[in-house]
Image 1 (spheres, rainbow, N blue to C red):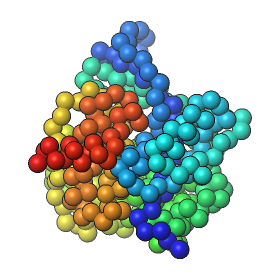
Image 2: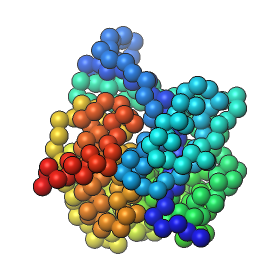
Image 3: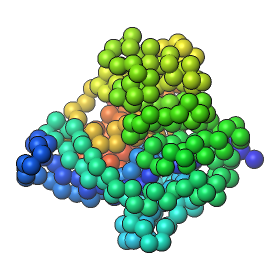
Length: 309
């Protein structure tokens, strides 16, 4: 029996070690940072938290290590209104780690160690298939093993669960996987890798979206940074502008957008309104430091939208 409005997120969990710098170091160069923090992150967890704080009824399929940070992350996820029944603790594994530099312009560069995330195998996905089967939507990214993402997409298709893929970090994907996706949310770089189209204008975004439609994907949302989002449904496209804010840190802005977007859609909001809502959530997040610490709660998003008129 499907539960109306339920979301399952499948993805990664990391502990983010974040250092703020004026500029990124060149090879062989040592630079001094101004601020260091450890925050909870990982694309899967960030998107789950964004959906949970936006009000979604959400379960999370993921893995943490059998360590102190893994236990603390599970506790925090539960506080963020997420069902953690299917967040497995993996013996003899460390929780995933991301090492993040943030420069003076708020840009970031990131290196990750998968740790327990690599234990999210197809067999483990199948152990949690009931959660996917009972959900209206499945949201995934690409910090989990690709064969596990494909397995989950196949389970979702069997049970008429809508598949949403945020294809990040950017990698080439098979037509088999793309053919199982109902909605895809790449940024410009990811869209180019998937389609071969260099996205530097609305016209190019429309062409890239067309390639993805040809692969069987109904809804394509290409995020364009400060220019907003190119939304294309069944080949009809439009750019939906975002909000102008003073960014201090863009970590998890895309993840916040994705989680908030799906939460709004599962409430029954029209696509353009859901994008507007997600833009607001992402705008708030870039005014704050860190990944999950920057993700806003529903009341904050609603208040931001009221202030914007």
